[in-house]
Image (cartoon, rainbow, N blue to C red; front, side):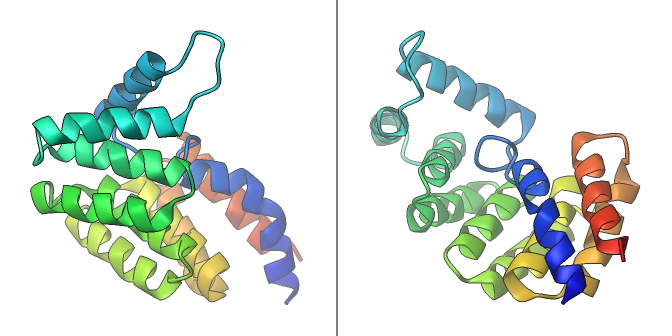
Length: 186
């Protein structure tokens, strides 16, 4: 019980990294594409309006219904709006066109977790790990789901150790290290 309480203290720090600082993890190309879509949709000093982004992307999707990047970005916009059922639907469609993209498995797994389906989220994340066992963020996410969705602190520790070992100097590696430090405190 004590370890669980300690881990909850690290949750705020790690959550930002698990979710990619802006809602969910994205590949470099997708982050850039979403940033430009957000910049186009937002007024210079206005906050980002996800409903405007969603409307714009939905319009673009009508022109290109099988564009995996638009589908993925729609999933991201819904995730950012905490509409996890919708984000899940778009991530699943994007996976049909990009079945080897570990980032989408990561995002879909987080969406399932936030829908209260941590067991399903874990299975999805594990599928992504099979696609790319060197994807650092998905290991961090696996630990997050195991700790906060399933109460499996030993499994979480193993996942965070893997995330940290892949690159301890990256932002994700440092977040994994912080989770581990909290876990190891007595």
